[in-house]
Image 1: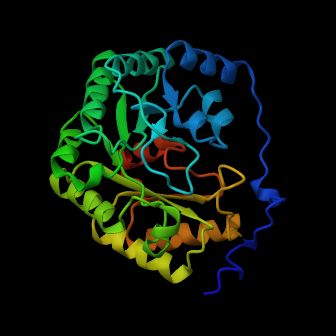
Image 2: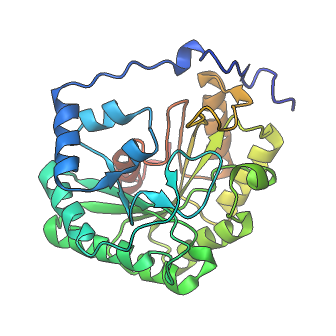
Length: 301
């Protein structure tokens, strides 16, 4: 299927379609969350990646915490997180994040990281320590860890899986054909193996992934991807619109309409993926608590 037909609108770099325009409102609650995050000296992907949902999420007193610093060792074209030489692992970071989770009163928390290919375990130990700290400080909080690929190290993955978590997330980001252009340093098959291993080792755990649309993928590629994810036991999928994080980033090849997002959501559900969120502003941790609540109640759509 041609990527510029009914599935989207051709990208105009200087103008967003109406459905992609969102007014940011920094009210008292948003500013209070920003202040607390600053006081605790912790990073959030909401800020580091320039997420368009920041005001909505901060306004609901929630955030996606970013561990292992704010500099990534990879240089993926789609990502707005800083690239460069990372700082040493901060031993006090898990405790500060745990206290922030407690202070915010979160019933479900999401923790992710920059990619740390410089570390022998890829940062798995810091994920596990953070999970332990959150469990101690806020035992009623379910935890979702959104992890990098750990360069395929199964021992690193197992260290994370064996910590006290409810959801294991790892984003594929795009279809395999577009990896060389958009996801440098990553490997599609390596990421698929991580998702498959996660489900095999812990069948009861919710395994989740996310994909951006508008990068040049075709309908056929998406349908094939949905089938692959269903076959390996993926429980949850998010589909959102790619937006360039800077002026030098690749431009979107299309803006996917809300109606087309809904059709992709239906197709993914029909392929056998139990939980699917799809929409222009959907991100991997967007309304994450709603997805896990649906999982616990046995709601598939």
